[in-house]
Length: 264
Length: 93
Ligand SMILES: Nc1ncnc2c1ncn2[C@@H]1O[C@H](COP(=O)(O)OP(=O)(O)OP(=O)(O)O)[C@@H](O)[C@H]1O
Ligand SMILES: [Mg+2]
Image (cartoon, rainbow over all chains, first blue to last red; front, side, top):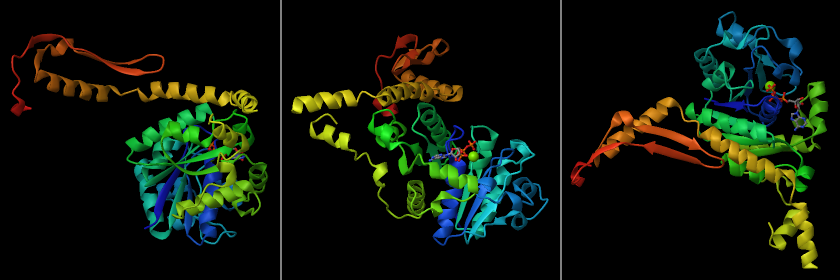
């Protein structure tokens, strides 16, 4: 039985879909079978982020309503051996699937795949409840901003209420320079406030925009920092202890100096 | 020299992130204190049960609220006492 992991955030636009695509591709690159489930019904995006938008025939709602078999709706990603996408429906709304149906589909996928990764819609309403219904573990994404961290806190509370304990945190779009200047909350600040385990930190990176334009996950880019961050996150999901990369640490010059003179 | 460095670094650390963190801390104090009415009722029931072991209280006059002031949350309970029991049998606890 595979592991079913939901990627969620509360606040929209913080990087759930980007993370889902890259983690899915990352797991496949490491030789695992991964199924990506786009639970953002009505606003599907995982297909375009992965460059698979032209291959959709059936979707999640078709599967839930028995219009096709699960296998028929799965799109095989030819670039990443083992990676499959179950796309969301675009013309329906979030009530087109019920939590029990979602649970059943995820369970069925977990029989065949090592990892089932669910891309959750923004918000905390029905779409969120659907997305978390079938999950066994949760990854919460935030950016280093007050509103995003606040929403992450709310979602962590809701996840715990849904018996999804100990979610792991990913901090996205960190700008080391601003952190250094004291104009952006750092990793310790955010962990201190949310009191959860850290799964990884992804820097703000133009390469993400460029690769997303092309429909190619950035994780393939050997030289990009964000690609490396996603590779590290993938390895941590697989249970390897991987230290934070340099940008992720607060090992900057000023902080070290401040510690030395006793201000830190 | 050290004095100069200290001043330089003090100035350096006065960025907006400290304000962000402090505001976040405060807003979460309020967010997290949003206990549902169901939970508050359970809490009341437990309070009544516990306190009744020591004194006779007026259950109808019981008031329990969560008070969120600027930077802290307090559980405020107002419990009218009818009579204090003379002795409490510890064994019955
Ligand atoms: N680390 C990053 N650096 C630069 N751009 C990023 C980064 N992470 C995400 N983005 C960009 O931010 C935008 C939002 O990302 P994404 O679609 O993954 O968010 P989301 O949480 O899935 O949004 P929604 O809540 O709408 O589903 C995208 O344009 C993406 O390319
Ligand atoms: Mg999305």
